[in-house]
Image (cartoon, rainbow, N blue to C red; front, side):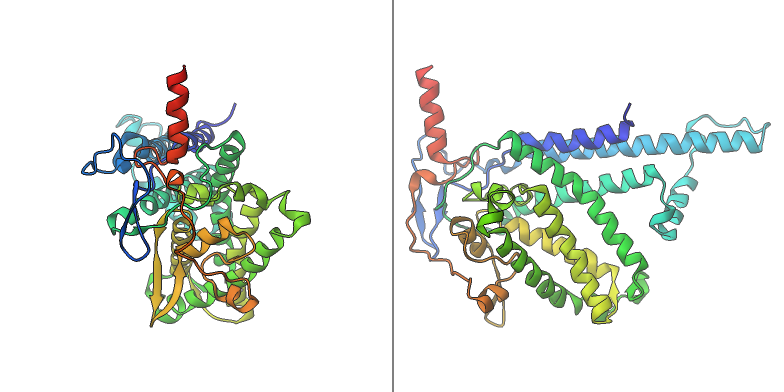
Length: 390
C-alpha cells in the first residue's frame, strides 16, 4: 500500500478541485474609475461584505494545511521510531522516558544537516516533506493573490469573453497533476542551484548585485523564450493538442487555479523554462546568482501569473513606462493571436504581436460575475430557471 504521506499529498491536491471562489463583484468599475452596473442586483445587499472569507474559500488552504500537518506527523513518528531503535541498540540500560521523549529536536537538526549536504543526501521522507511544503506554498500564494485585489481596492476588469463557470473532470485532472508537478520542479531548481558554480547560498553573501540586479535580466530572458514557446503552441498543427485546453476559459478569474489549468506538457515546458533562464544568467553570462534571487523570482513570477488570471486590474509602472499590466493577458484569452508574453510585453512589442487593452470593447452585463459564487450572472440565472422548472 502507499505510504500515508503520499496518500496525504494526493488527497490534499484533490481537495482543491471543488473550490470556486468569488473573484468579482457585480458592481465593476469602468476603466476611468466610474461605476457601471453589470447586472441585476436583486437579493444583493450592497453593504454586505464579500464572500471571500466564507467557509468555501478557506476550505482548500485549511485542508492542504491539515494534510501537511499529517505528513509532518508521519515524518516525526518515523524519526522517533528510528531514534528509539538507535537508542536501544546503543544502550540497553537506558529506559528513561517514553516513545515521545526519544524524538527530541536532534532529528530536526539532522534534517537540516542533510539539506545542507545537498539533494543527494535527502531521504525519501525528506523529499515527501519538502514536496508537501512546496505545494503548501503554492496554495498560500494562490490564497493571497485571490484576495490581494480586495485588500488593495483594485479596479476590476469587466468580463468580455465567456467565463468558464464549471470545471470539467479534465480541468480538475490537469490542475491536480500540475499542482503535484510543482514539487519536482522546485527540487530540480534547487538541485541545479546547489551544483551551479556561480550560485551562492550563504545569507551573509546576499548583495544587490547577486540578488536584485539579476531579477530584471532573468525575467526578460525567461519571457523571450516563453513568448516563442507560447507562439509555437498557437500554431494550428499543435494548438488543438496542447494549448487549446487553456483557452476554453475566455475570462480567467480563479487566479493560480486558472493559471495552472493547462496541459501538463505545457506546464512542464513553462516551469522548467525558469531553470533555463537561470542557467543562461549563471553559465552563459557568467554572473553570480544567490538563492534568495531564485525565491524572489519564483514568488514574483507566481504572483504575476496568478494576477493574470484574475479580474483585478493591476498595473506596474516604472518612470512612466508600463512594466506589467494584467489586462494584457486578459486580451490574450479573448484574442489568442496576441500578447504571448507571460510577465512582460517587451517581446510582443518587438515581434509585432502586442495588442493593447481597449476599454471601449463591448461589455455584456449578463457575462459579469456574481459576487457570491464567482460564476457568471447568466449562468446563475439559467440555474435558477432550471430549479424553478424542477
